[in-house]
Image 1 (cartoon, rainbow, N blue to C red):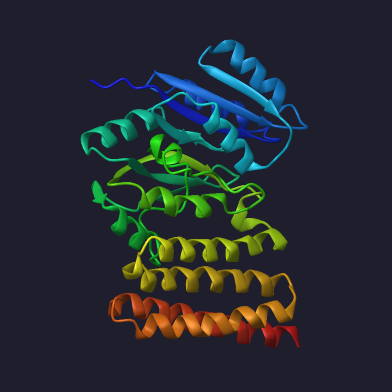
Image 2: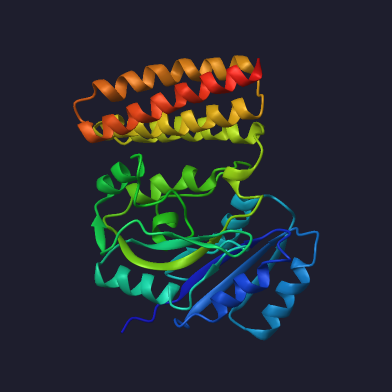
Length: 324
């Protein structure tokens, strides 16, 4: 029976309504050999006091106070102060089932994987649970298969950190850090962790509860920081080129098309600069053509992308008609 130390990193910023439930869900894990690293990222509410109280109650908690630097900076602090062989991340407004760590750890060891992941629930503000069941049985992926899945329209391995357990060496041996100041830190990072893994395993258990608040990234009103998604796509493409992943470029084009389409919709709804929107629309047309002409993308995927494109065009027509 393995009993390795696992570091659970919880970045906290102004989360007084949620943080106690979040941290207690980690304290109450059935897997006990935990190092619980709470990084208070300069909170201005009662989060600091709540975390200090919890740290007194459980000696496994390592509480770090720092000036506000954003979620990426807090996660980097947590990583650099961690001692565990394995790492997982829990957001301060989310919570985990009691066997979250144990089941991910068991799956990782049984499959000799570098990353394990699970299904999860999204939680509405009123408490409504929505099941996010990506697989019904355990499924394994090579690094290339994981990236192909990540770049698809209906991905099984979500582009998030919080439903996964990682070998710490994926970060330390490959100098993987979170991009300070960027909004989409998970997307900036996860493709590198997949690439450097020999195997990723996904289990069907729903073990994590992701709270949908007004501050959730995809629910926030459009602002300049959301353009960081374009920098993320650029860095992803450069990483694939630099690591001779030519076979993944057609799949990356699907990923780029779908994310840019979503970004444009967001920009239009919030009346963003029309010149920037038109620039992105030109890129979108070019990428749609690449996807539809690619011999590597199967017909089913091409049909899905075509439907996305049609829906996008209908959205534009209806939107501009209503604006007149």
